[in-house]
Length: 232
Image 1 (tube, rainbow, N blue to C red):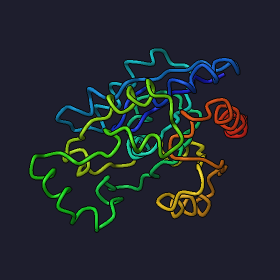
Image 2: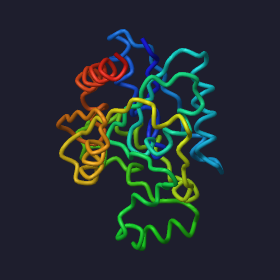
Image 3: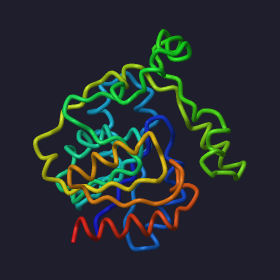
Image 4: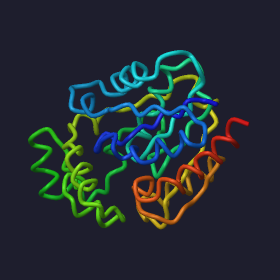
């Protein structure tokens, strides 16, 4: 089986995958969960830096499936370019990258014009709501110790990371791709339509944006089925 490389959003930490990884391993998959946090706190350029971080965490030349959540989707192409054999890429409630796209392109104009955003940007960072505990509880995660750890791992990401434009490498179009959506989610609904229009394998599950934390077993089974279809 290919190694499943679970890529967390640069806004949060690897604990967002911590419950899912053993569920996937119980289904027979080798799993890697690289931490992107220190790299996200750095100066960039972030695409090559994330690619190097992930490649160092997954040695060897065995096939991999990249599983990218949320903002990690934008950086999937440069990360994929670091591997000899990417069997598939699955976006999980994630941004689908386009050539020359930057993370800032995905933000609502009202947010970019808000006082909070402007004040943070003046300090060279972007405000991150996941640093508080309340948003985690709003998406169905209630265990107090886990909520505290997830909030502690979240960072205020550098503005430069949001402004960095990502080029699609030559081999990117040929990688089989899927999209797992947690629904309903108005922010990602247009991206799900984009995935369908582009011919990606699309699956939907009811739940919040971090459903792999709230219901890891169910999400693991859905991902396993998608990997089977994409790599079969």
